[in-house]
Image 1 (cartoon, rainbow, N blue to C red):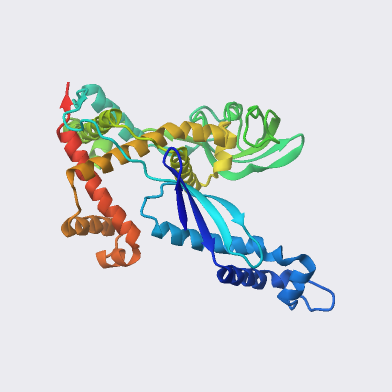
Image 2 (image 1 turned 45 degrees about the vertical axis):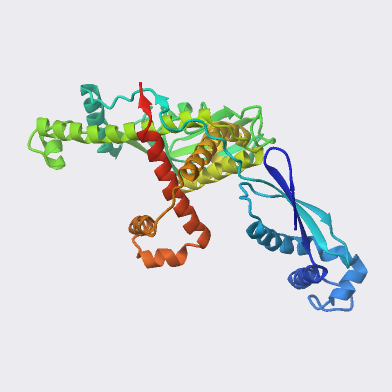
Length: 424
């Protein structure tokens, strides 16, 4: 293995797999594929490897063998490298020939060094945590809306209603992939779907078949749909109206209070607690970003791309829990994956900058995680998952344990920065 340092905290790792190990991978590839190989004179799946290589060339199994070798060889190199790799590798094959070592390169981003400026005594704007009467009324309104019931109604759909519908999209009379949904819950006016879609459902009735006409953006991610006019055939199965309760005796009684004044006093107390907590978080974030502005670091593009992809994958998982795919989200919002990635990029950069600075402050302060602090962190995790600490320890790999220790040190760094910040 050889490491070549490149510009902007990038590195190229050259990794060599021995002739013997690569030949083992070739044999694995042959074993994996032999059931699909058919040559006259041999039963399917019984053709000797030598015969296949004679007919199709020695390299017939090389691509699959490379796919077998690369993950294991890269992981071994990853573990041996002292520097911290902070991106997914870009793999390039250098040599893949019979009787020679298999050689490939992995281009990766290395964790950048951070040069800190002053991180104690940074100035930030004073954050107001005062609870106003307007805050209390807004919170009560939100609480009433949270208790609202979705009641089925027998009338035409209007803005704000929740409709349960089936839909299927067509372009030039042909259904397209990802354009179909059944029993989908859609709140009209929420802006969840492509512009113009929801508006055309207003005024429609239950079991009424209708067509919704929209046009995909010119820069839509799926080229075959970009700029095309689409027709969605829809049918609404149910229309639900939101019924918000009144702030009356029944509501107050259900909430466990004797009077409206007592309820409002409780709302105020909880809001004060919430605003104090939010102000603490806002102060921490403002102080950290002030330290970031005073620091210098050369963040490699590959590191940013990796963080953007991680955030998009997290968002996709959240969508899947709501029964929606990322492709459907793009289709109904009219956004492309590239646009979404560009929109995500500033948050990704901010996340990277903050973490790098906090780790640098932790190192400058010489922070470590004690056994007691690590145990407390594991206990908190165990409680969240309703498990025993011993079970958590068994499940967490060593890398995750190291990550927890880093998190503990980062929390200490946050306290140092925020507690020494000067509000003006």
